[in-house]
Image 1 (cartoon, rainbow, N blue to C red):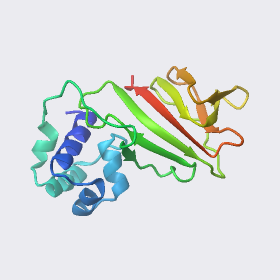
Image 2 (image 1 turned 180 degrees about the horizontal axis):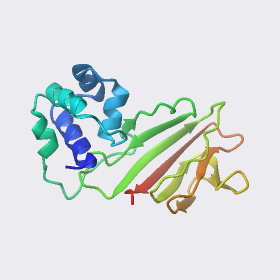
Image 3 (image 1 turned 180 degrees about the vertical axis):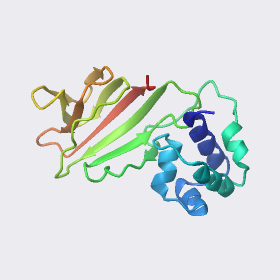
Length: 189
């Protein structure tokens, strides 16, 4: 079973038991951030960690490693109620990530809401091996592509599509205190 399937199995089991990420973290002895990273396949948990999480969920480790839940044809969600992705640098850079399709198992796309707030520190350029489609819903931002020389100003309703491995970063435009975007990532290549 791959990491994606394990993370989805853990999330599904947690949600079936009506546990929050924080409750599972307390029961398993891990931080809320670590459980969130496991469920969003941002870290590869050790077998020891998987065993502790399985125990906290009241299931054998084999259930997490071999579960093959039926994948629904669709799921319904809300842009107002995504699953918050906890990252160490969220507050530092004034960003908040909400996963929108976290209940859809076996998905090919990763839709997120990203919120930007004023902060004193700018995020460095990032590059990832997924394509990205960005829709600015509210506010205005500056999109730096490849470095500080190429800056695209976006206002609400505008979009940008990035191929994989393109260095970029986003910051609030001057005079804007808050912006919200829908970002859709492809699966890793």
